[in-house]
Structure formats: structure tokens, C-alpha cells
Image 1: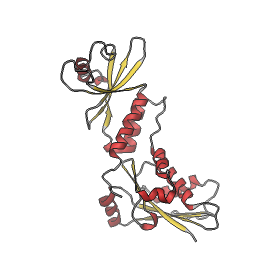
Image 2: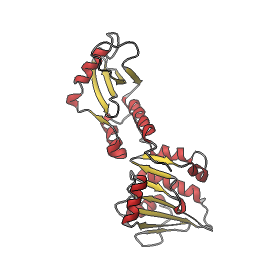
Image 3: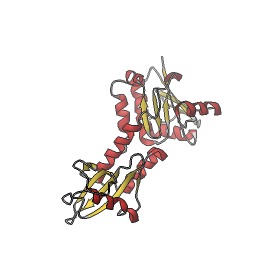
Image 4: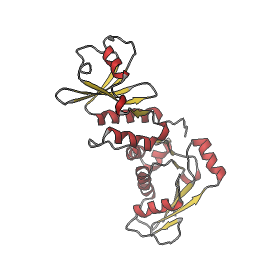
Length: 271
């Protein structure tokens, strides 16, 4: 008895998906020369293109750009567990590609959707793959922020993963000491470390006007905070403007990404 499952996803060319399978199974060479098929001793993978109307339905129902169906069939005489194997493939897909995804087991209702870089799961997903499987995939889908990444690199990765939906952007260098810094210092007390020293606006959020500020102290140390300005043009009462402190710009970026994902993880979908 075999198990057949489907991952439907966007790809510029079906051959790209087969190339991906060849990377995932380097020790098991493909036994077919067909462009749309990958076959070895325990898995048979084929790629098919959807018709125009089905592609439109996927967009209308789930907002995803998917036009190719990746079909997996695991043979009963193989050593693999089909659920474990399929989960492995899905982890690599979300890690290696930034495309929209839709997992639709056996042609039934979708139990996983990735749209605009956000993953959404139905409860059935963990029941099929095991407890914690969805969390494991979310971890694969995260942007890995390391200490050596510049703030420019981080924002580029966010734009690549989340596209136009990502609502934080980086201010150009010539505008990082503009009116926002002047307003911040009006609202802070003179004893605040962000009142003195060189202060810059690095990121700004279009959704709620939160801004990431950097303060470079005279001794060269850096302070990082997200402020939500009140635009009162005068010193604020205790607790305002609201702020969030971070030990580095990278930690601030992690917080920004986590908040963005949390606020957008439903994507308006009901699986």
C-alpha cells in the first residue's frame, strides 16, 4: 500500500522542482530522464501544471500564486515513513524557496498555506504529522538573524520573504537624523540616555508609526529602542512615549519580525 500526498506551489518552471528533489536525495539518483518526474527506489515524484481556472481558484480562495502540483508517492517496501519523509521535504521547501505554498493532502482541504512568507496551519496538520510538526516548520520558515548581519541585509531579507506586505522600511542615511529625532528629544527627559548623544532613526513601521532608534554614546556603545512617539512636542509623562529596549539592532529586528508574523499569521485565511 502506498501513501500519496500533494504539495502545490508556485515555480517558474516545473523542472526547478525536480532539481530541488535531486538536491534532497543526492544519494538516490533519479531513474528517469523525464523533466517532470523524479523516481528512485522509495519515492516517485511528479510535477503537473494546473489549468488557468484552477490557478484562479487558488488565488480567489487562498490568495496564493501556485501553478504546479508536486505529487509524492512512497513505496511500501521502502525504509522510510511517508509522513516523516514528506515533512522532511516540506521543511526543505520552506527553507530553500520563498514561494507561496499550499499543502493539500490527497486532494482534500488544505492543511497548510504559506502566503506572503507567513505559514498558516489547520489542526489536522499536527494530527497527521505528529505533535509539534507545525512549530518545526515555522522554525524552518523563520529568517535567521545573526550578529554579523547588517541592518540593511536584514530588511532586504524581510522584503524578499514577505514582499510588499512587509510594513517596516529602512530610512536612507540622509534622513536618519531628521524630524523624528527632534521630536523624540522633545518628548524625553534630559536624564534619558536617548536625549544626549547621536541618535538615528533606522527603521519605521507604516502600520503604527513605531520607529527603531539607535543611540551612539560618546564611549562608542550603542543603545537600541523602539519608540512610539506621541507628537506632543513637549516632555511626556512617565511611561510615554512607549518604548521597547534591545541589546542590539539584530535583537530589535528579531522582535520586529516576530511581531509582524504574529499580527499577520492568519493572512485572513480560515483553513
